[in-house]
Each structure stands twice: as C-alpha cells, then as structure tokens.
Amino acid sequence: MSIFETFNPIFNRFVLGNISLKQLATGFDWVEGPVWFGDANCLLFSDIPNNRILRWTPNHGITVYREPSNFANGHTRDHSGRLLSCEHGSRRVTRTELDGSITVIADSYEGKRLNSPNDVIVHSDGSIWFSDPHYGIMSNYEGYLAEQELPCHVYQVNPANGEIQAVITDFNCPNGLAFSPDEKRLYVSETGAVHDEEAQRHIRTFNVDAKGHVTGGEILHEVQPGCADGFRLDTDGNIWTSAGDGVHCISAEGELLGKIKVPEVVSNVCFGGRAKHQLYITATTSLYMITLNRQGIQHP
Ligand code: MG
Image (cartoon, rainbow, N blue to C red):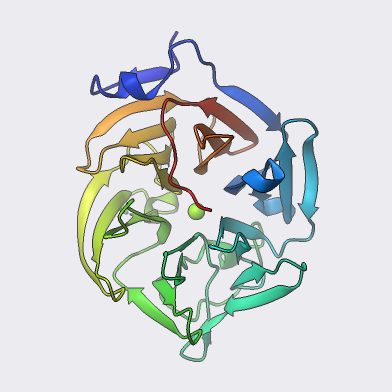
C-alpha cells in the first residue's frame, strides 16, 4: 500500500515512487521543533515532556544536545546560523550564541510574562516572529502549570532595538508559522482544536509589507484530521504541514495536493539533508524522514 495519497496529480512529481518513510528513532513522548544544521550534518529536535533537546546524526543516531532544556519546543536558526528556541518552562525565546551562552530574546510583553512560546521564524530583515499559545502552562506535562497573564498572540521582535510587538491578536491558539519564499505572506496556524473539538484548525494567510506591517488574515486551508501544529515551505511555496494522519502538502492557493501517511500523529516537519530535499518529521514518539523531489527554503 502506498504511503502517498494524491489529490492533485502535480503531487506525484513532488514524491519519489520507490521511496519509503524511514523511522530514524523512537521511544520519545512528544517530539517537536525539528531544525536542520547542515554545517554539523545533524538535526536538533525537542522531546518536550522529557525536558530535553535531542540531536540526530546519520552516523551516530540520537544523542542529547541539551538537558534540561526548559521544556523547549520550536526552533529555527537565524541568518548567522545561531539556534533560536522557544522554551515553555522559562516562558521565553532564546538565542544560543556561537560560544554557547544564552541570550534572552523575549520573555514578557507590556510587563506580563509570555505564556509558553511555541514556534519561531526569522525574517531576512533579522526580525524574530513567534507564536505564544498557552499549552506549556496548562499542566505540568510540557512545562509548569501557571496562571495565564496574556492572550495568545503572535509577536515580532525588532532586531535593531529588541522591542517586542504583538502583531496578530485574533487567534485562539496560534502555533506554526512560516513565510512564503518572497516573504510577502505569513502563514499562521490555529490549533485551538487540540483541547476543544469545536475550535478551529486552519492555516491563515497574512500580507507582510516591506516594513513588516501585517494585514489580512484570510483562512487558507482547514486541516483535517488533526492540526497544522508545524509546517515548512518548499521553494515553490507549497506548504508541508503536520496533520493527524501524516504530512499534508497544500498549495499556496490552499488546495490539498497530497498526503504522506505517517503511522503517528505528526507535530512538525523541517527540510534538511545535502540538498534540503529530505523532510524530517517529528511525530508523537518517533522521528521519521522521507526523501522528496522538492527542496525546502529553510535557511541558512
Ligand atoms: Mg507547535
């Protein structure tokens, strides 16, 4: 039985027929936040409930990168290659400097503590954008149970002065986010349905102008089953998103083109490998990888 399900024939050009989905490692609790380091030939990802960031390399498999990790969730790299991390436990976004020291990028807004930053991206102008739903403070499972002080917003941090601004404020639980290849569009997912079946589970599209101002917010696509917890784009602007039954590929116009079926609920993906043609998939207890006939726009 094929691991692919095609809804538009164009999807058949994105995948390789003789390729299998590889389970690279398993035995975790809830993995998230994959980020590829081509210079170190490794993938970092979070095992959130076990309070650690793990490293996978082709030759050595799994080793621990950071433990405890302050219940880190999503990661990315900035344009200098430094690791940016969302930390549930310390309710902040941090940057790991090249010497290993930690710089706090954001931990509060208007004098109140952030909830539990979830996923983070960097614009080519150096601004850092992140989502701040409340999952990490709802229980002691993925962080520390605590009072929510702020609504769940998407924030932007100005690289020049470090100022933080709430740029999207009408979500229930914003989660995954990504820019289009030309950075004129920002995609943000709503994952309120994780705890409320009635809530929405869509990806919305925002326009971003040259000054970083955000407008719009139309619904692009509703993910079913599951949620678009995390997603990345390929160089043609197609969205590869987590879902309850695997990875869904959605066009820039919002059409479901095809699926990669994964035997566990998927949380997030990222492109990696020599040509950014391999999709690394964090899925509940396991890390998977599949080689695609696509390339990701992940930087650097
Ligand atoms: Mg997430």
